[in-house]
Amino acid sequence: MEKKHRELLKKLVPSLKDVPSDSDYWLKRSEKALGKSTHDREVYPVLDPNKGEGLRLYDLEGNEYIDVTAGVAVKALGTRNPDLVAFEKEISHVTEEYSGQDFDYINQTVLSERLTDITPNSKEKEKQCFFTTSGARAIENAVKSAMDTTRKHRFVGFRPAFHGRTGLALTLTASKAAHREYFPAAFPVVRAPYAYCYRCPYNLKPEDCEQKAYCVEQIYDMVSMEGTDIAGIVFESICGEGGIIVPPKSFAKGLRKLADDLDAVLIADEIQAGLGRSGKWWAYEHAGIEVDTVCAAKALGAGWPMGVTIGDKPMFTADGRNSETFSAEPRMALLSLFVLHYIEKHNLIENAEKMGAYMLKRLNEMKEKFKCVGDARGLGLMLGIEIVEDKKSKKRDPEKRDAVLKNAVQKQRLLILPSGKNTLRLLPPLTITMEEAEDACNRLEKALEETSV
Ligand SMILES: Cc1ncc(COP(=O)(O)O)c(C=O)c1O
Image 1 (cartoon, rainbow, N blue to C red):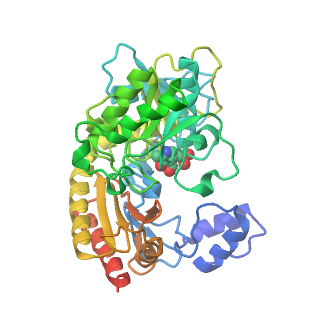
Image 2: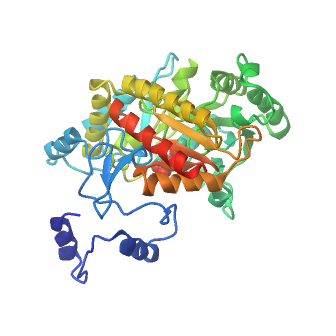
């Protein structure tokens, strides 16, 4: 960590006498200072905030890591992308805040138009945007918009599903009991199994559902018993937190029809999978459908808090039905416009498709080689492997997954995340090169080798 940065901290906090470059020291101090969250201090080091570029990150001790987390899909352009850093300096004269839902300014309007331009829409109704600061809040606003415009409040949601941890979003989340226990639901949800073909809840094979997804057919039956008054259907186009599950195309197609039949709003959660990561702007596009509402965040802010709900106009029926202090602030909106421009200019969507295909091939080879890799799957740069006791029983092996994760981070210096009960997920920046993709896969393979005795 740079001396300059240490001095800065000491200047701002005069009682801070020493800032040692010692991960263990800061891990202990953080544990005391910070509320319990998702930190896994047994696995991850303290990262150096001054060093790192692209996929290369460093811990306080100066060890170099290859990063396939991209800050949980936030840093699509890589860490401290030099062009982005230069752009941030270039726009330092632009006002940061104006309360975008009370005042109008050009940047926000242009960003909204740009986002609706990349969102396929052949309907008569035009699309518009409602900006916010996080993924969960983008979902909140989609849910409120659906309730407001349909005057209904029952939703269809999935298991597993992750849509965030605030009230309305948490009501739809179902990927770990710890997220939900003792927190009340805010509205009724008809909860259906996600199209998890590797573990099909109906014991079918993917080819059985090529034309029609049986799990969607079942929802007709569910709503006929629980209530057909559905305001919206909320689905992750690729299930991220629940285990990197790529549903068959018939799933999204079936949901489109279900939404039409129920006169409900079809809401795609693209917070992790969206903005080019899947090899298209929006992952649901792979199924050849259009949705009514898209929720995005993470990559949209170039590392800063930013979220958006893109929906049919009018998203709210009256003034003041929804508003918040922060929106796409003048500087934030420019950063988001930069992200969209950079993705296009550098063909990052094509890169995601190409690099993703290569990495998936490597993951499939690992599946052949290691008994504990039950499944390898992904679309574009949203990839995962599922760790099992053996391929035949498919029994989940969370302990082995945790051991591979620990080895990958601490021995191979591969920054990688878990997902679901027994999956490892790879969400590298969209800028990843072939050399980096190879390096990351080699490190993961080595971690599997060293833990698969
Ligand atoms: C698919 C999905 N939806 C919603 C969220 C919530 O986003 P945030 O953490 O910005 O509230 C996440 C976060 O990981 C996510 O992956």
